Length: 150
Image (cartoon, rainbow, N blue to C red; front, top):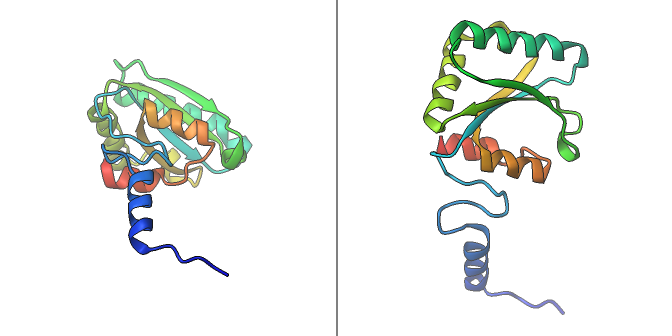
């Protein structure tokens, strides 16, 4: 025999367990700390021969448009859902405002490495959210979080 769970209980349970008081979702681990150091992540197509070319193109873009910035370009590998998804990590921006300026300029300038099918997606994220993605080994939910909060 099945037991029916009252809807009010489900509402209270999901409302209290999935969402923190600050609007973050502990299940996903994403937070809205905009003053925190931010990074940019490039999600690449799984074509190993393109990785050095994309990394070099990002470096050239930084040299051209941000010659005074001390940004570090690093290729990262993550297990789990991201095992076959090459990522390039661009560090570090002082806060959300700086990261969004870089992101918006990428959208405006549309450099070659964004147009040649090598880069599937890119977005800024805080240090805490970057760490949450690495712990979860997944980007699930971040794009929606980004579109809603940035």
